[in-house]
Image 1 (cartoon, helix red, strand yellow):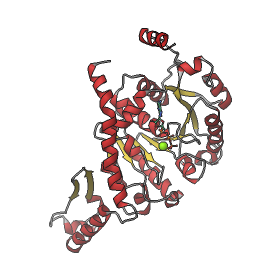
Image 2 (cartoon, rainbow over the protein chains, first blue to last red):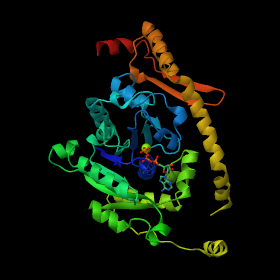
Image 3 (cartoon, chains in turn yellow, green):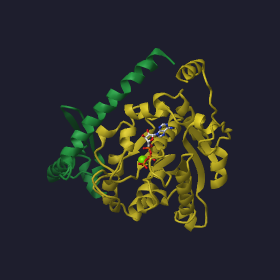
Image 4 (cartoon, each protein chain N blue to C red):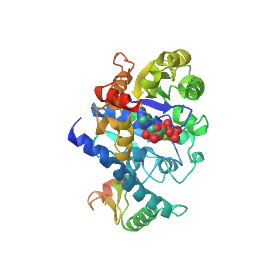
Length: 271
Length: 90
Ligand SMILES: Nc1ncnc2c1ncn2[C@@H]1O[C@H](COP(=O)(O)OP(=O)(O)OP(=O)(O)O)[C@@H](O)[C@H]1O
Ligand SMILES: [Mg+2]
């Protein structure tokens, strides 16, 4: 039986879709079978980040409504044969999803895949609640910034109350993934520190993803950063986070600002 | 960092631009209209069903949208005559 992991945040634009693609590909690289499910019905983007936008024929709504089989809607990644995508519908709205339909699709994915990653839409409404409904674990994507942390706290509340696990008296295992972390700004005290974030949310840390050009470049190319440039900063951080998600006990190192020779030279000139 | 990285760095924006243009051209044109792929698929299924009974599982539809041309690939597995009575019995 595979594990169902929801990638969620409350606040929009913090890096859920980027993280779903990067973590999913990182786990699939180890040979595990991984399905990525886009729950952002009406505003799908995971297909684009995965570089599969030209290959979408069917989607989650088709499967739920019975107009396509699950096997027909799953798109196999061209780079990794253990990685699959179930796209969201672009033309329907969130009401096209039913709880029973989602339950059945998740149950079937769980029986075939080792990991099922659910990319949640922003917000705390129906779409976000359906994405987390059948999760075993949650990755709460947070930026070190007040409104994002506040929204994460709301989401944690929902995870503890509105999920199937919670209703059965169990707990969804939660992890905080801090993304877009800017070491320079943190060192100047312009950003909430990692300790602040963890203390406020009192949830264990899965990893810290630096603010990085690598992420933008990867999305331009339609490839998860952990596949296209696994040796670069953001990818390394995601690869380590994925190992922690699989249970490995790896210490998290808070990135610090390293001023290279060139930076100093440029900094001096600019000053 | 290798030379290749520098090269990649310069070329990622044009790749993004091209991917988006292609995608948006398709999405704009199909907005509010029934999806051609599902129409084709349903009609093809209906034609096949007139002659043989096949399970949806034996039908794979895949798509690759290009700038000037798209390919719709339909892969149908039709049971052999000898297998058909078995299938009906089961
Ligand atoms: N570590 C990072 N460094 C730099 N940019 C990043 C990083 N992570 C995400 N981004 C950028 O932030 C933007 C939002 O990311 P993404 O789409 O993954 O967020 P999201 O939470 O899925 O958004 P939504 O709530 O709209 O679904 C994108 O432009 C993405 O490239
Ligand atoms: Mg998203």
